[in-house]
Image (tube, rainbow, N blue to C red; front, side):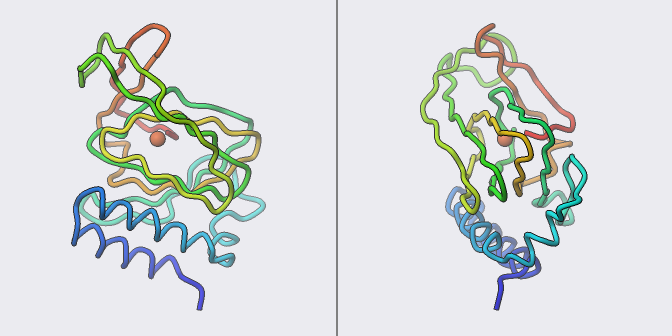
Length: 180
Ligand SMILES: [Fe+2]
């Protein structure tokens, strides 16, 4: 039997309730891998005619996790950013995402002067899923027409977080809708 969205939601909820830490989030990453193997789910969630943008697939009550389908148009990239008090799991559906993982090296945690160092880089291909835990900083780059499923610990529209301008050496507070 294919692994359904309903099963995913129930299993992710249970995993996060049992372990509200990196272990629980890693379980969610593995569950996303399993969900993306369900071709019916993928076809229904990412139809060929899907409009460019982000589409809410599921939202838990009481500021719980959110599942979004991201449908990109032109190639794009994000600046380095974190997810505030939240975390994010990115599961590639089509195309790819080049992930760069950064470390903040100035010892700070807020907006203002900041320095970053690249610590890792890899490509997520379809079916592959990456986890960016609370406080992790990453940036993404993708070609035309890439599609990915993203699960965040909370609705990031309501989470204050940081993006970085690595060249200018700045951290900037963001608190609104973002595809990152
Ligand atoms: Fe992100």
